[in-house]
Length: 340
Image (cartoon, rainbow, N blue to C red; front, side, top):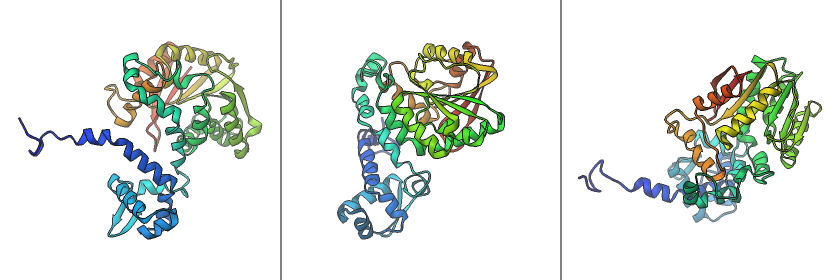
């Protein structure tokens, strides 16, 4: 049997990396709070310059910057720090793709609290953070989501809008279910002049979407339905329905109930665009996509990251003729295009 000191033998490295993962989280949060990445991007590349720019102690900045270098967020040559290409794009506040604000949602106390009871969630097979978890009516977490995740969703929204402009350039009526920040419908309205967007979400969340619609200059073609997607009357005559980051919160049976309702709301030849984390059939790959199931276990009663086969079957059972899978450049998620 190999011993601890033998090459290729057992090592506790993965155990310690996982047990101490919270330290990476808090170091990243501190760097964003101090605006350290932006400071480096501006050219403050020494400990003394960073300490002055970030209003922090030199010892603290040195240890944090070195730790971030070890973790791969920053590089260091002699005593000078530089952003990696990824950090330059996503963590420098001056970048249009800046994602630091996403921590407002990812680190929201109600979200983190759901993971404090993982053992019981596994025993139960669903969240123990209240009866409905994050899918409870008018859960305040979704306001955090709407405001914090805008940078993260900007590119997928633009890519989906570009797809719509190619396949349905004359689209007239679009239903955006669980619209959140509203970016997906707003980007379509910007590219398709005849498109009227109907956004459905909780009233407090729709306020965020309406503000962004005004900023984009599409408010005249943007109206809302406030309430529960399972209870509200959608109406009919939609050429396109958007289901972005929604189905994974629910069981297969619940998803199929919603999809049948969506099917009835569409015109003949209407389509549904779904954005989801879609793991491979092995449910292990791609790793960051497959791991999403754990989030659903901790935060929802019955949600999951569904494979394409599972999603395709849901749409087929709801009456759709076919569903296609497409990649989204620069995103972990994929798009499903379903036809009535």
